[in-house]
Length: 282
Image (cartoon, rainbow, N blue to C red; front, side):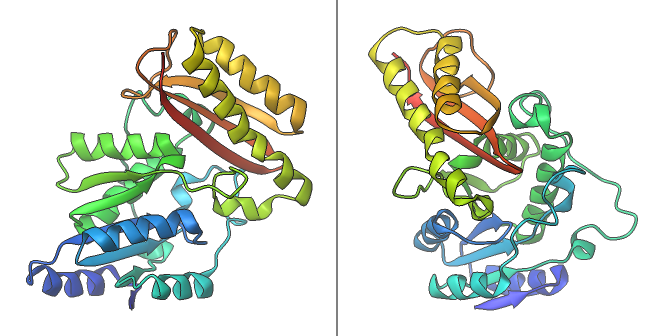
């Protein structure tokens, strides 16, 4: 496994690899690997000759009162896990490498960034789109692998890739969960024991809502109310949003039809957790 910190040195190495007609898979991460990250790495390894993983806690996607400084950084364990997964390259750029002095250019994807997380995290997706565009230009992978848990982020990146004519194919892997259903996240490490026990009700509420929607006709608002009720009755979490959205456009819906996503965001103390479920409505 090779480790790079410099964009220039990474590109020089990749130029030689691409000359051998190797297919390149890319998994962008902020580190603190868990089984969700590893599942994407394995998928890339199966489907490509070369797999590259980036580890970069991107400051431009964090708000002033968010957990940028607190976000877990675990380079030693990440290196060990990547080696175990036979990853070919890890790219650890510094903030200065990605945003040199005088940096002025940012990318914004409109409309689908104005609700869900985008409604509450100003400039978050601007930071996401910009850093991912930079990685795509640096690595130029054939395929990039993203996780379903961050469903809005995946949609934003797919739209950016489509609109700006990037040649990279985007593949979205299913959410990997703990045995009790909690979606795996680097932020789970910040939960107290009590919060960790309560957090299972996020997915429980989503599953119950899905079952209700598939059994009989129900309006999105009723489903959202059901989810809120389950979370409020079983946890001390603060709900930021619960929203039913169209599974193809990601826009809020007034009636359930076809491919549907229910997405939510909550705070357990200062720890923000998101989750979603995808299903075909009755």
